[in-house]
Amino acid sequence: MNEQMRIRLTILLLTILVLVGLSGGYVVGGTQSYSRYQHSSFANQEHCGDQPPVHVCVRAPSAIFSAYYPAYVAGQSSLFTIEYSSSSPITLVVSMSIVGLSQVQVQTINATTTLQSANILPPLIPQNFRKLTFEDHTSLRVQVTDNSKHLYYLNEIPLVLHSRW
Image 1: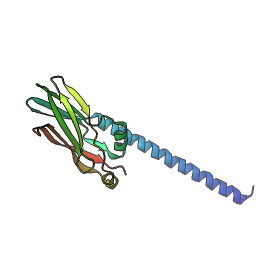
Image 2 (image 1 turned 45 degrees about the vertical axis):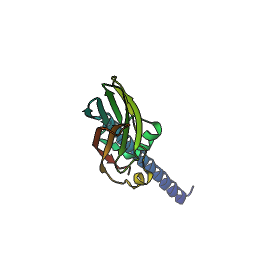
Image 3 (image 1 turned 30 degrees about the horizontal axis):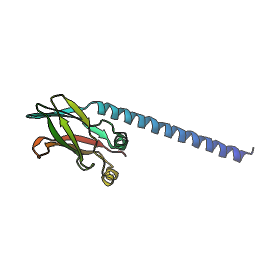
Image 4 (image 1 turned 45 degrees about the horizontal axis):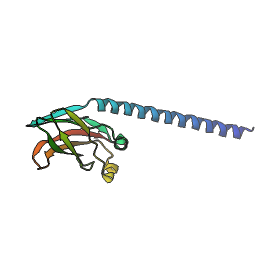
């Protein structure tokens, strides 16, 4: 092998080492980000309200990483949980959305004297999701009514959206 070929081979190997190092750093950074996200998800806050005969509590994280949201929608994960009961049986309509990021998800539930729970995950509005390139302070809007539109619970729960970039 001539000298010129050795130099090229050395440059190629150094370039590969640098790229492997950078990709390793990228993986470590992503793992740390996911770890922070998981920690944030487990630190759910509970927001409750009573309007007789209905009792409603919403458990939601104070912050979410938007990059992971599509995976939660696809897997129907329990990012937002609503717990409910009623002193007399009643059919309730739950509407939930992330203001500015998701569509309104509507779910009908039957409340009884037993405390029950439901997981609701509003689907994203794709064009709004693509535009999210910075941290955003928004809210999780939750409304619970009966079939006659009588309001039992309404709350705008503060939510921080960490950018996917």
